[in-house]
Length: 270
Image 1 (cartoon, helix red, strand yellow):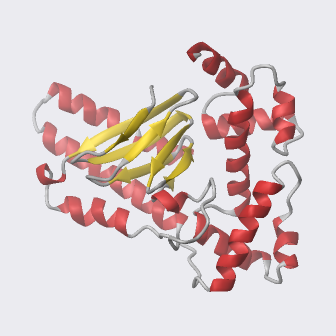
Image 2: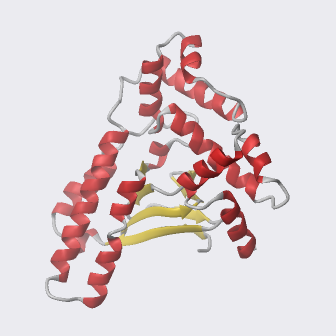
């Protein structure tokens, strides 16, 4: 897949990343995307994809005026109800709610891939194919809506102090990515309980602190893997993971390829 420059369209775009990684430019900033990330781009909104490494995705286009009335009630509300941080707050690489991104579990992402069935129905157009497509789409929306509710279920009142703690912690993570980070200790040094810290962090970013840290480490590792001369063990250490086998398992869990497979694919596309 090649990079797609800034563009806009009159349809609703639904995207699910299935393998690899890319950069999505939307709402005036860039977000690294990894497998399991799903998001909606409303009509007439500018966005772009920067493809520097191998990536696979489902990219579906829906015209709301050609679908039943329940479209706006379910699809539209799901987008508008996502938590949106303050416009003047700093932007960090894993703030999923900055672009209304929902991160699906591996199991839920596999279930959403039933879009293949919708495509088959569209091509073959057998008896009641339109109803089948609508039923599958409705099920997909339910899966995503459940994931959204779980992702943003914990949403404490956003006080200024809480926001300051989260912003400072994100900066701390970026500056100490290669170090061992204990979030319970970090919370205590900021005079809040570990449970409260996890709650406000997840509410602000869409991810628990540990998952946020791992996601950021893998995104940074992707950049290091572009250097074909850098040993994979050194890549792992550079992002704070000193067990190369664990790094490989974590990388595959997030990206869908092992670090070596991913690097080989990058090399093939050069």
